[in-house]
Length: 228
Image 1 (tube, rainbow, N blue to C red):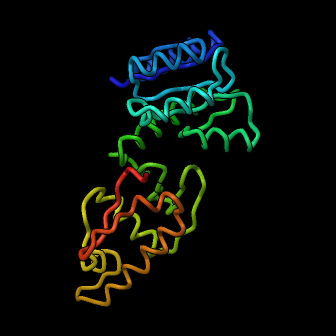
Image 2 (cartoon, rainbow, N blue to C red; image 1 turned 180 degrees about the vertical axis):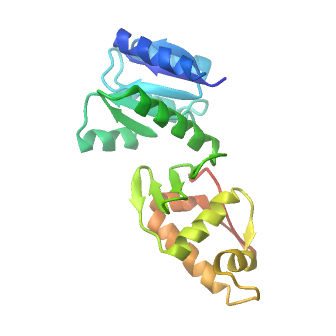
């Protein structure tokens, strides 16, 4: 059973969130201020943290910074909960390491969907459904849409297919010949620089997330969930 830590000073909201999360099968813990929340996170090492931005004792941004600096807690995904909705606040939230950002008031259904999505993302690729997630990368296979940290990125059909092929084979090295066969449909050895050129384009368009695509020298490429 996955554990969600709720760091929220509004008691009614914290209890409501805990109620709905437990109905979905999660175990919950609640902390009412930033200092207690930080202690709880370090003590129980939850699978995910719902973190209010404006907290007594220690602001949510500071809590998040400290969590991401600590080796034992840096990989715990954080969803920011806040009444602030300005773009600069969202940027700050992401800069300190939050995986997602939900502005109050929000629907419980929306939050639950985001919780599930972030947990799937942190585990690697979603095992079921039309949306595949790796790190900050989300691929809607039905709509042929790719988003990175919530921002949609435009890819050509070939780039999309190449990225999708690597994601579906997460962690497994793919030779250039195999990629030429499975992405381009070549049944014979072509100029493998075609693959190299497209990988370069992918990395450029993906920005920092492009670091997830690893080069295996003399052989080919693979994609890993960890991009740092």
